[in-house]
Image 1 (tube, rainbow, N blue to C red):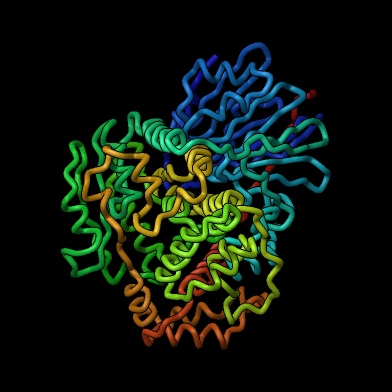
Image 2 (image 1 turned 90 degrees about the vertical axis):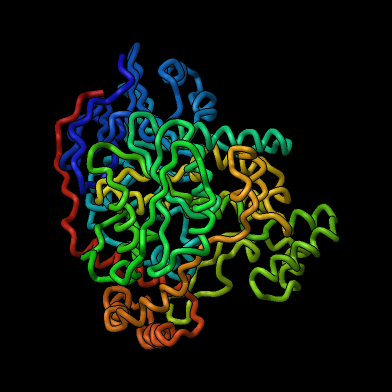
Length: 571
């Protein structure tokens, strides 16, 4: 028995992923560079993995692997391996991870509740079932074709891309919180995780425990760094400092030495936390050509357009001397500053005063009238309240598929986190290319489970900023952080970036998206010109479209992942 995987030296600039095949007789595909954890049925890893992120157990013909950051102890691995239902055991573990349990004739892959560790499946031309954490790698088994319907929906609203499809044709996701059961020639899926309602204090205790344990499980033996800006990232920095030295990096616009994040970070005095600054200069502006071609990822990464600043900040951390662990606050806004879907809950419970007050507060935040929010709440229209954008961009040519219609605030929050967490995995792939292991603890399944167990109306306050997070973490946060109500903004940098790189951005209006008939180049160029002049434009849509362009170019120009065929063991 063993609870570690002896990986090779941690080389840089490679993407990490893992996968396997359903049990079968005869030959099966294996990706180039694969390191087999076991062969019956096959389970492999690709790329440079830190030893602690791959832990295995084997006894009595049963094998168990945990891939990712996980708080489980060795005895708990044994318990899960031999449990009639391993999800009863693993549901209490903190971190972001995938569990694989197998015997020679059967394998089960258990996905995390949040979607931070995506798993995909495909079938080869001869019917072999292959699964893996990289949709792009699986796409190379049959055509390497982008799913244009998925991409069109993504361009219309990146939070509403079809959850039953991937960015690649013939490659399908295993839903978060599900169990994939593989047997010779077949696969089935069943849901293992569902939200559970809990009293407020119990839910807050679970949020705190999930965050603390999620951070602790990642820090041992590593050089630890964090983003250090808003409440979310500062919370992680303070927690991480309890377990060892931490370098906190604050990005700020060039020429500024005070205001915004800088003032709040300056007031932060935490033992073990070293504060650093990263100045976003002109060469770090969005759309900068200095970083070269975007590395290929499974789908358009959120940081595609701002990759120069993304890469620059990660390189400033200084992890060249050994394995490092970098925390971001990604996901904090999605969990603790969600859309006002709780208004429907208030309407159902006839809490009219709270409904009106919260609708007015949200309307002020978005500079809109409150009546549309009230009407949506009274008609129980969770979907319209959950939408990040009211309409598709004017340059989109493909018709939008029907948007999901969540039944309540819990379902809307889970769908939002699932989509954002999956997308964030592509940013982790970008960080891999830089040689930095990036982690987003707010996307841990245990954190989502704890937050969604809190009553919907407790997740939002018209008078306090992120009350669920602040109340859960409590005295761990210094008072200046608990009392903060704003976060830094870089919108000015986007206007400036378009002006500085106008010719390049206009060139990006042509290319694969236009060639595929997905965008109207004239309307897209008109929006770019307006942005250069400082006019108000739909930045969310514009950055999504430009990021998709960079991504499509990247996967076109990158070598296609290679596979070979290997003789498999008889089951």
